[in-house]
Length: 306
Image (tube, rainbow, N blue to C red; front, side, top):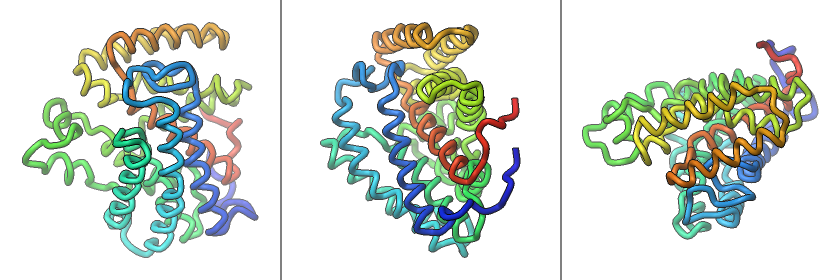
């Protein structure tokens, strides 16, 4: 469904208004992901999933620490709109690292939101660039801008690496998995196809936000090549988790209580095997942010193809 206009409707389409809106949506995306329950293997209101070093309190402290940085990412994008898109990644990287340090300080050294900072920081910077040029920062334009910003990122940071030092580099060398970098370079292809579209379809059918997000998460678990799972258990574990999620999706006509019961059982299964699909949690935050930006720009979420 194309945008009716290339600009966001007044009074939101001004730099200050969009900066506030984008940063608030990014923060709320992290909150929505945290509070959604049940989430297999992940921290939620019911338990700490497969994690012994973090809980709801840890995540809330992390969100409070990182949320002020989203407006800074937007401003970096706004000020660098005249530069080539790939150069922006270099401009915001120092802020991204500073945001990570703020997170680690707030959590006592626990990595709660590194993936969320990367993805939502890119999206906020992309929103700033689009705002500067008068384009509507809805999901289509945002994801295209992020893809432009991350052009060649996998080649530069994974393929060209001589020594695999980080977990992402090791997984790329061993299995060809591109992780968060590849997802950003693709313009969040997995998040859009297997998260945003199921979420919008569910909302168009009248489902409430919680039920729609649970369904989007299940679709992400079924399709996302989650490097967190591979790091903990290898490709075989990823395949088992995806297969289980697809089996649950085959029962698409379940009531909300029945679906939650399935997810609680899925949660216990992953906890027993110490598995946490953190990459899919990050993409769920991206889904909620993109849906919110579409609403800001006047896209009618009820008119969804498919």
